[in-house]
Length: 141
Image 1 (cartoon, helix red, strand yellow):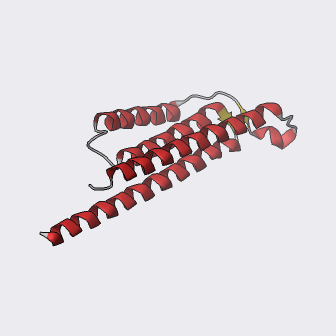
Image 2: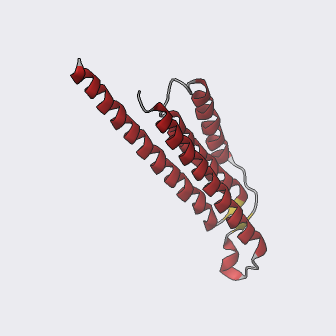
Image 3: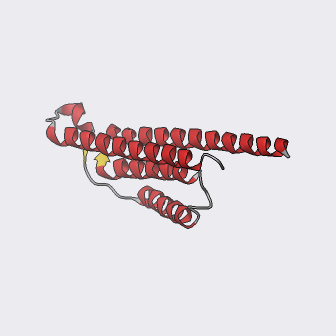
């Protein structure tokens, strides 16, 4: 692959940007939940701790997929970081499901959806690039 450094740069810039946006939005939402005075139905969404079987399932999924990714990191290039982005989205979802109560938990689902879309777009883009490079090489032979 000719443009390996370019793909690495795209991967890591995208990953760092998404993680920073996730950290900033989670902090802003939790700060807002802990500082506002809510009355009535506005108090439906609040910060609080919950843990149940669904949280265990998500945690096991994150741990299994992250350990698989760790073992196959070099083999999966350039798809490794897009998969890591999707796993980070699952972590974002778990964070909101664990530390918020109410409708505000949908922010985690929205973050997972965005991470999943970005990961899939990167995976499809890289697959097309690899396919086009392989066709170009086979045509030269």
